[in-house]
Amino acid sequence: MRKSVLREIVFLGAVTFAGLVADKPVHSQDWASLKESFRNIQSVKAEFVQERHLQILKDPLVSEGRFFYLASGSLRWEYLSPLQSVMLQKGDNVQLYHFSEGAWKQDMAQGVEARRMVLAEMRQWFQGRFEESRIFRHSYSQGPPGRILLTPGEGINKFILVIEIVLSDRPGVIERVEITEPGGSATRIVFRNVELNAGLPSKVFDEP
Amino acid sequence: MNFRKKLKAGLIVVLMLCAGCLYTPETPLLPGASEDLESCAALFPSGPWECVHKIEAVISQGVSSSLIGITKGDPAGRELHTVLLTPEGFILFEAEQREHAMSVLKAVAPFDSPAFARGLMEDVNFLFLAPEGGPSKWGRTADGAILCRWESPDGTRREVTLSTVRKISLRDRHGDLAKEALFVVPFVKGLASQMELRVHKPAPYRLKMNLLPGTP
Image 1 (spheres, each protein chain N blue to C red):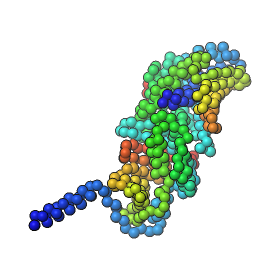
Image 2 (cartoon, each protein chain N blue to C red):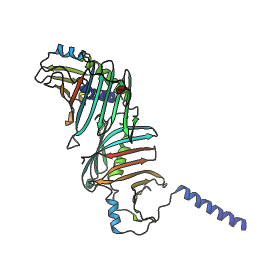
Image 3 (spheres, rainbow over the protein chains, first blue to last red):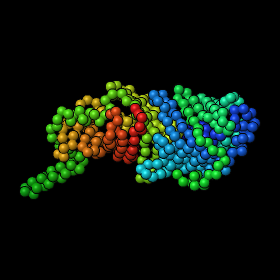
């Protein structure tokens, strides 16, 4: 059970982290100023397109969604299609909902604990505290384009080989995140319409 | 003597009633046309297919979960390959079937038990692969529905019923309904746009499945 939770942590963490660090520093930044810019972010709002490449499928499974983040500890990670589902975090409270037959329904508890742990891991990441991660080793190349490589340690590398975060040419924006798994599967997330430090209403994090 | 005869007759009636309670009688069938048999077979994909479904798994009233299911198969070799994912794309379960041999490629808790793997693959077989061999009986019910019935040596029977509702049902050897699947038109390349699997035994649950556009 612990192993599967950890796998989910890594995967969900990678997917969600991709959004959280969007709108980060430009490719020419050194590591210290990159970390500093993480600390200056109070909120993030963005849309994303996620491609899930699996060996079983000829074409990737494409999902679209959006996310909202407050540095004070709130997160909304939402898929709009093909499934409508949303993960809400406020403080230590994590809730998962899916939309079905015209209404939001609370999802079974399965996975919620894992998501809580994901968010704890992510808190370190989006504060630029990569060194404190127990799961990933990091490396950074200034580029252009700037890239952050996250390499998992022994055990987790059976499920994820590497996570690559590619910074956009546009100052402060991440272009895409690519998660490579053994066996040819991969996830690619491309971000758009990123807004930094915008005012976000509280209900975004309270209601599905 | 008269009393003994009455007692005997009474016992026979009671036994018949009990037998009736224990076994659900088969629906009597009227002769059908040869096309009816083809209609039953058409409920299942006839060639290789690949599909993606969004799935709402309902365990009990008010308790449900959202998943993505990918299934690929070929009826010729009774081959199946199925993957179950979270909305985020995390693989919860992946298995293959060739002929009757199943191999689990990935499974995470709580989806890593042999019972879960067996049950899930049974459901996928039930939904996508026609029973082996021809039906033991087929024809029309009194209300005009097409019905094809396959009987297994273990006493279970599987029925395809085509009327305003298209469904497959599985009854156990006692005649009790174990599971049924309802198919909603339109069909896209041989696959129903919506399906609902209702499992009654041994543990009840429902899977509401919507075919995602663009697949196969």
